Length: 337
Image (cartoon, rainbow, N blue to C red; front, top):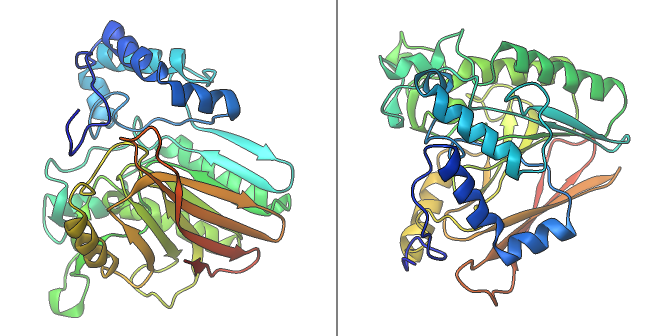
């Protein structure tokens, strides 16, 4: 395998039809460590883009219907998820009055993004599409399902409302262009790191945070993946104003094996410091390490530990990188290094 990217050799070909998707799953599911993890723990998986095609969206599916059908069929065949309705995967799990877990699909219903998504300015086209009021990451039906479920969990007295989903909610804006000197520009305009995230769908993010605030939905945690790095951030009602109320806490988990810039530790540490400086709501950013998150919830508190591993070594011992402590009924998280 590559000393930079690879964990182990992949002899299979690129997955583009049912046979090759199945071959990929057989290879990965044959991994002894993954088999042991499934034997020891229950899994509640959701898929992102690479189970089908990079940065996919609803137009990608309409352009490649046969490939999409094969990709989603193979996913259901090899994951512990029973189909609900066709290719739908968003679903909800309730753990008594402790946790309500909403699992989202932010791929197959989303509107397309601009072709160039990285470091995109949104004060003018094509990037300004990110602020169109009708744009959706979830689709109208899933959005209603999510908001109704969050409200119902709050009304039922469930302590923790947890949203498991794919792409970062907290804005990752490098340059703020929503300032008087740049008017007129769309609300939230700026230069964004990646419009594949919720940054590409700012109106729908506003809908979510406004709902959480207006309905006093307390103790909302967002669990995110996708970007091969660790982040912790508060999510505010007004993301232009850090002093506005925090309506959720987001925990972005690093990848188990896929790298970002971690193979260049000095660069990774510098990039971590650089991106953490984008906004005061980022408490932790780590582009260097890979690993997993461990969440513990009680009626009084939630703790989240980010745990680092070296996936290239079978004898790697997991090391806790940082922890976060969150008292129920509060909107603040303490970093426990």
